[in-house]
Length: 318
Image (cartoon, rainbow, N blue to C red; front, side, top):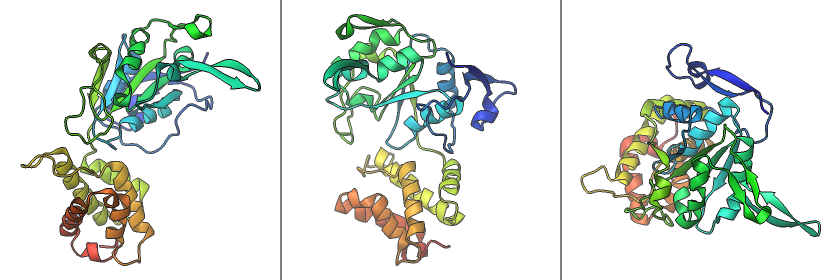
């Protein structure tokens, strides 16, 4: 049994919170499944995640939003600060429920049952994160319904083994859609999910960071990048996102977006190639536009050139 510990929310997460407001986590015992703590800017959705950790009430928790908006990292960085072990699974179209529960494997000439991430998380009280859940077959996911509601997991293939849920077991999921399919066609392989499963989820829409918050991220991840260059990069990123999300008059005009993840990559590459001809343009191509269609690559570069001005053809120093 792991030792619990109370954490002050304002101090632990660096947010404005009522004085004395706390949440229960665990003492740091060096558990290998505790995520690595990294700098992270916590947003409004933090309160919803913490409320779920306090009391799941027979629910699971779905975070949905555009690619690279920080859905998985939000959960992992909360867990890192509360020393809460995580079982993280990357879902895909060929995944079966048995991959989550466990299966027999051949080991040193004999077979033995190896528990999967769902069984381990349920037994040990870890967080189970199902990343890109909308890529998985809804018929397979239906096997989670009873477990989410707090029922024991019965593993028939292991002699009817029964695993009762640990009180600290929680189920999180992330997806680029909210389970109703992808009408944009941007996220290949996404499947419409079963309504009975979705009815068991609380849902949080996660968007991109505000410009000020992203500036803080760049200052942490690329501290030698001039502040003015960082601000211009963020302006470019937000304009690309606007066109990707269809917020312009003509709807979605781009099929690629510049996420916070890609923004950090762009900034770091610009510093790596500093001193070379057009380092910002070259870095943007490697970070994003080399995988865009030719017309969109040209449009993004024109947009960036308009925003960056002389920096586009020069170096990274303003």
